[in-house]
Length: 418
Image (cartoon, rainbow, N blue to C red; front, side, top):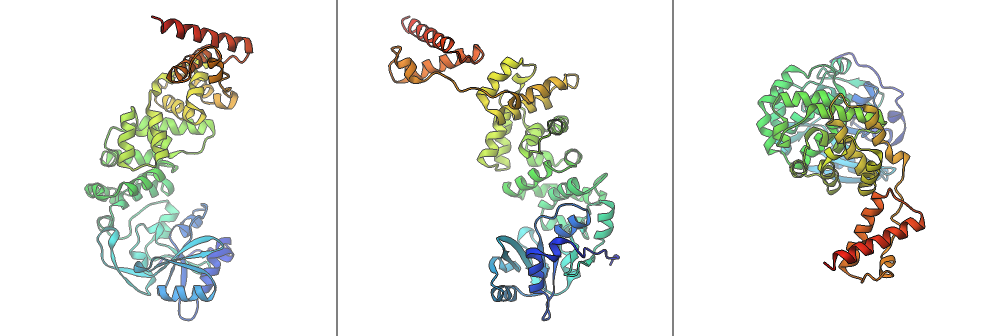
């Protein structure tokens, strides 16, 4: 076991829900430790999000102690030893130490135990196999501390076996490397992912979606995507052509505009050229309705946004609304030639911050008063008038607006007399 650093004094270990649960589950012959991502992130000076806790106590004992302390417990995965405790409205997963008896994907057969080393050995990557006790001492049974120091993502034990236990670990290997690793992916793990790639076909769309969207917003997303493409993995996941250059350009555009990373925007740059691509990917990853609509909008004639004058850009912004205008414009920017002027693209992308589209000033009543009967014809006239108003660059002067209404009625009347 490697020399152990200390997390003594970490606020999430000394105060709050995790500290309360650790105190509750330690003692009377039992021990509890924080495991996994929280320990990894703390050692890498990253924000600590979800805090998972492992314990020697059986699930029934966890529930008993929680009830005595008036802490709500939920048997979220009690057959696998997991109980969720809710402290001050925040959930914490508590899992009894386990070892695999049989492994077949997500339905591994486990036995409860008291051996911290065996529990660590059944996890996926060495940097995720660390644990920290109530005093902040970090325990390492699998070489995770060395890999944390070198920013290396490495499977615990035999990579082929770890992957065969759950083929989602192929995507997790690249996603964790993109978020926490440096340099080339671990060679043994990379080759094992290639050997096991046929197993991706058995994974659910929901699980693929979750990993891909997390990967795309990681700091090392571009390098990870390149490595996945070289390994022949992206075709199995997305089912079509991918574009590495536009993905890198999209990320650069986000940085230029000061925008947060957006997974769907980056997915469009990677894999969407036409709306059919968006629909295929939405189905393969089972995207939410909102995600699918965002992706579809970006793929719809994005190439028309290149080289626009600001007057035309204002019309596009009016039609699309700020979020969809910006996303589609950014896709056009990401797919533009490198010799195009980035300042011009930036100017178009920031139009929503500089200009707000006014509301269309004409109403149905304006045309009823001019003799247009209610019904389908009225809707058609409104559409013609709105197009004319946009072409005139959004006038709001009452005389100009009235002239557009009069001209629209005259045109409609003339056309329907023919």
